[in-house]
Structures are given as C-alpha cells and as structure tokens.
Image: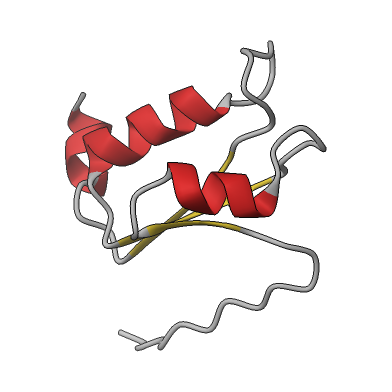
Length: 82
C-alpha cells in the first residue's frame, strides 16, 4: 500500500495488458485498468497486448489518458538530472 501511494499521480505509467482473460504471469486488460485507476497517472501506455486485443477496440474501450502501445512506438520524456 505504501508503494502504491508513492506511485500515485505519475506523469506516465507503462504496464502490460496481455489479453482480456487473466494470465499467471501478465496482467489482463481489466487488471491493468484497475491499476491505472488506483494509481491515477496522467497518462498510461498498455504494452505486450496479444492478438485478441485489437488496437482500435482498446482505444475505444479505455479512458482518454490510456493508450495501447504499438510496434515501433517511441516515448519521449523530458529528463532532468539531480
């Protein structure tokens, strides 16, 4: 719980969403969306989606701040050193 609280409100959260059904070693789409709701990032990117998860369908099924990744996606973020 303490770790989750520290992660709340991230600029970006990237996590996997393999398929609609649960899987022993990956998040399902529903589980990923649950974590996104709990952690409330400004943006979230879903990765490692298996064939049944169609890009356009996932875009339509998810909130505006959640997007599915795609092959060749480059995420650029500003980096400030300490």
